[in-house]
Image (cartoon, rainbow, N blue to C red; front, top):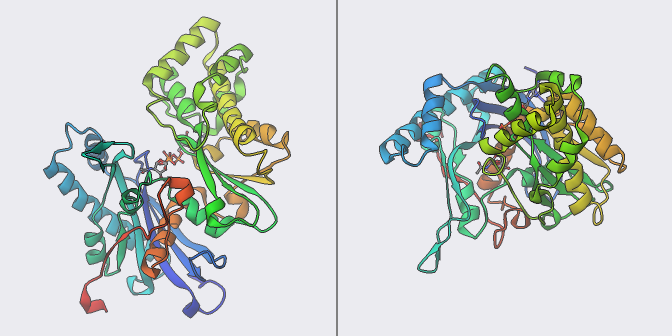
Length: 406
Ligand SMILES: Nc1ncnc2c1ncn2[C@@H]1O[C@H](COP(=O)(O)OP(=O)(O)OP(=O)(O)O)[C@@H](O)[C@H]1O
Ligand SMILES: CC(=O)N[C@H]1[C@@H]2OC[C@@H](O2)[C@@H](O)[C@@H]1O[C@H](C)C(=O)O
């Protein structure tokens, strides 16, 4: 494996590990980093290797069981915490091998872990703010198996100062993407869609972010129902491409109050739920639409919600130059083309992470490698304007590697 340009001594190699809300496996990335992570300069970050390791079915089922508080007994959660620690360590070692490196080359690991519970608005007791969040995948196990210091459990530090503990990726977007002369929008199209705004030449406290609405959740939801589970996504947008958007239904769906709700705001599967999908299928019957028409209509709606987020909450203060799309939705060409229509009409170009030489799937793993570097350097790595925290804090807990390697 060729080393990044320049001398290897000025590069620091790090590993980032992430397991997201779709629980499709562990994303592991090796990055080479040159420069400071405190925002005083733009660090140079190269993705050296990336790998997604699927979970064994049994592990995936156990994670889903732990989402249910009635099943998540303390012994099962604790056992899964160390189990995932072992799997994360294996994923780290595999991606390090893939990079042509050895554990001794890696300065640190940053591991997000797996969120099994997130209660940022949990309320108070006797005047005490009792918000909480749980990410499992024991950092001490990762450090012990790899011999590399591991930073984990990031979100709680932001919550401890009144933040939502999410989203955390915008700090790294600020580090990597901000530009002096252009205002950028970073749009993630995962299950839910979320936008980060990086005004031109911004300071960290000028960055803001919000959930635009559905990402792939409606498309996946209707496809799963229409195919009775035979398909779980509209691969390549092939259904949407063959359908006609129903203008009347589209207008009705646009009236969802969330889209008008002021920012900061976030949404989830609580709103875009199973019963929301049931209603969509009733709408399909009511208007006599084909499966393709329904998929085309929700695809068009999804693109509109992103355009609307920009139009309503961003454009007046920060006219943007470019919208950079990441997440699985960027692989749906019909969604991308509708998004392009929306944004181009407002003078905003649309690009993907890949167009910039980044990797959509690796983005969050890379982010946690960088956030961990901040932890070790003592650099605050939350964005209070984004999370609602009272002030910046250094997030992340460090598990040191065994002494014999020191
Ligand atoms: N080839 C493809 N064609 C169409 N859609 C695709 C394709 N590949 C991925 N997708 C869409 O992307 C989704 C997965 O996106 P992603 O991995 O970003 O989600 P996620 O990890 O749940 O996101 P997050 O945790 O950020 O909400 C799939 O469910 C699907 O809707
Ligand atoms: C609590 C939690 O795990 N939140 C995730 C989730 O998945 C997407 C969205 O909701 C985002 O807020 C966050 O993750 C990303 C990595 C973040 O913190 O930026």
